[in-house]
Amino acid sequence: MKKLLSMVIALVMCLTALPFALAEGEVPVIDWYIGTGDPPADIQMVNDALNEYLVEKIGCKVNLNYMNSADWEQKIDTMISSGQDMGIVGFGSQSKSDYVIQSQRGSYYPLDELLEEYGEGTYALFPDAVWDGMRINGKIYGIPALKDNGYFISLIYNADMVEELGIDLSDIDYSNFRDLEELFYETKEARDAAHPEMAEYPICWNVSLLYPYYFAFETFLNDSYMAVANIEGIMDIEGFDTDTVFNFYDTPEFLEFALQKQKLVADGIYLYDYTDKSDLRKPNDGVCYFVGWGYCYMQEHLYSEQWTSKMIMSDTIWTETNNYFSAGTAISANCAYPEKAFQVLNLVNTDPYVATMLRFGLEGVHWVRGEDGKMTFDFEGGRNKVVGERGYYFWYNAPIGNLTIVEAPESLVGPNNEMMETMIELNEACLIPSHLGFVFDPAPVVNQIAACTSVVAEYQGALTRGQFETPEDVEANVAEFRQKLHDNGVDEVVAEVQRQVEAWEAAK
Image (cartoon, rainbow, N blue to C red):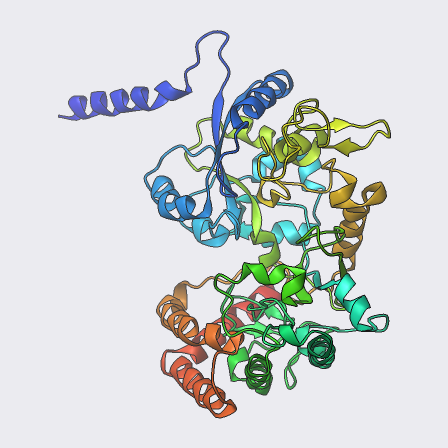
């Protein structure tokens, strides 16, 4: 039996090794799953050209697999958990894969040794604190995308409407959208007087996220704010220092915000519901203000060729560890060729040719340089010329890697690459929280977190959207919300985050 068992094990090992064996002249082929949209028409053309370059540079090929969010959410977890060789895998908010959870599950290949051997250029993109923040149980499993790595919040506005109404925005300073109430009322009053037919329309497009549009603090549980901390230089919540973890929903500031939002909806500043209301972005329907996140340069016609778009950036710019989990790439734990996969990612993050191709396709086919030497899609036969019919166009395509080395048309990034230069400056100017690099381990309170997360899902959306009839309804629902959180263990969650934060501080 022992001999038989040994033979079976040897056979299994041989069979397992088969995919690694390459015939003479063959090169490794690595799958790459990107969750930012459906495959474009010219995907194979671009994939083939990319592979020619990769074979020359590092001796391998990739298969680009673009998936839309719905397909990704339905399929990718099953594919990963089945033990499939996924090659390179995107993670983050666009790719709909949680970096921390997948790392803890053992879904990704550890990158520490690969970074040291092949990734000097990639490692240099971020400070040590960021790489420390990417460590899960002591190992780095992902490469964050270098992009807008802070919260760059902006008020985007219809400049033609503002000019027509005589609204002066020259001295507008604000930290968050709570500060803009007076401006919104002033604009709506002026618009309704000038255009009575627009009186039933809101003055603002949907701003439904509580964070980061209305508050700035350090979060430890992604989209649930039951355990947060203040940030030095901002201090949005009174009564707490930067080292004290607290339940944001239990603060006076949360109730004040919920009451303000209900009032703004009741007064027609915002809509109760924006479902199927995309036409409101047209100028004849009166919406003037929009929220922006991550914009470092404003296109002249962001939403419509019919009106001019401009922006005013918030004077509060900060970052936190979760920002680096929001977009990036990892290597499958079962990848047959992890060294080659990493070398691909190193090129993506350091080689402008590769970074540009993965956003805009091929020079001479999808884009050219005009007589002025600048990139353009507008040329005879250009396959990116017609909006809505573009052959290969993925802008930003943030999860694949470094955005700051991409060559792009002036219409997207401004004169002299203004967007990229500003992005780098703003990243460096971000206020840094006390616990950058700390990653919370939810295991000790996983049941409480699950229960409280369900409570947050039940209440937070309607309160953030202002979907209650009266202030009394808001107060009653906030009180009920808070009590349910306490009943489901939120105090234990806060205490556990505090304990781990203090242990992390002590070990530094």
